[in-house]
Length: 346
Image (tube, rainbow, N blue to C red):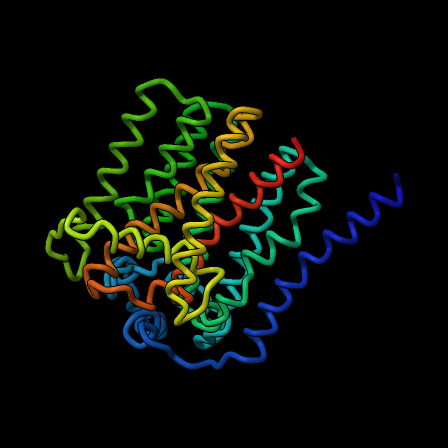
């Protein structure tokens, strides 16, 4: 028995390898140079810090429809000490992903400690998939890692703390921070709403507060949009919309230009998740709560991104498989892996 436990612990230490690989990529392959939005976003924050003119308004002002709040805040904090070293922004993305991994493994361990140790290397490989290498080497992309971490923290707070106003307000604070990080309030708050319901929140007062907050975040998001798209009907091409959403979900396992493969993997994942969710709901419904919320978050991300990509291109397009979209799709595959193994153990 002791030997088996040691082997399991040794196996779990393999979870460190994907993290070390991400650090290696940042330190050895990245360059301390501005990229894309950094020219007119975080670099201006660094200049303002140097000149002593930085304001809160500058931190919250969006560029290309995104405020990149976490990136700007971190730049403001480290610029006086580092003279705006972009590699710190890159390493922040790795650190945020490591925090997400710890939370996910802890949540699995609440179900079954042995399963957490068994799954740790696979969960680490998913969260630190090399498909995100470009994200790690681009400083402002850490907003995506911050966003996913906020989702994991919200689930952790709602799941671990007893049903109370304290837990709800803490989750609401995390929701607000996540919305400011990436500016996606129109769907972001729905994940928290689902988490509250599955956890057992039933008093209407809880939902009144959550919906009021959601309305404020959505209004803030819409008021800050640089470009507001015209209204288009999903019903005009539901097949195209579905293809885009499925490709988004399949992005962590498919590379450009494998659009059809991405769609096939996304469809396979959705069907497999539905079957496993039905089984787990029948046997141990409480084990499904956390993973249903994480999968729901990725599904919502897929839908809103599919809408945007479809609106711009109106055809099946490779950008749905780009590295920046992988991060928000990873929680879906984490959820699928956990509930699949849960069913096998049961």
